[in-house]
Image (cartoon, rainbow, N blue to C red; front, side, top):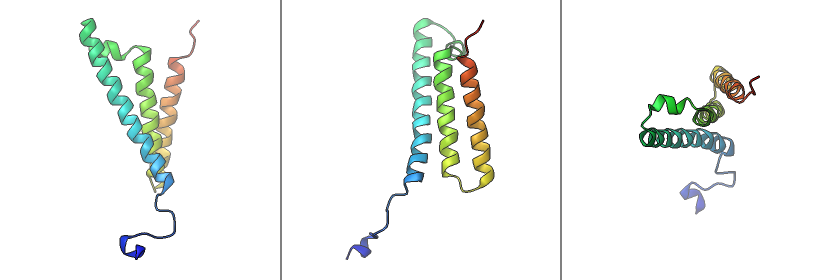
Amino acid sequence: MFWFFGYNKCNMIEWVNFIANSFWILACAIALATLSHAGWAASILHENLGIILATPNYNSALHLAGILFCLGLGGISDKWWEITISLLFALLLLQLLFRLHKPRP
């Protein structure tokens, strides 16, 4: 009777796709929350949104969101070139994130 409802004995959830999709969804949530908070801070401080987003805290959050987004898209892709491009963008954003927090002399 369970076969009628699409139930089978193998794993029903593809965990790799679930985790990869969770990465890009989390990335969108981080980016949206960062932009929302930056917009609120800009209105309170009477500052331009671009100036607020250029601060290291907001910039780091957006870089982290970009890294998670690229990892998520690379994880759900089937083509090797899409995975390669996504991982290259993730590495580029990771390098920019480390450069942002590198101590300056």
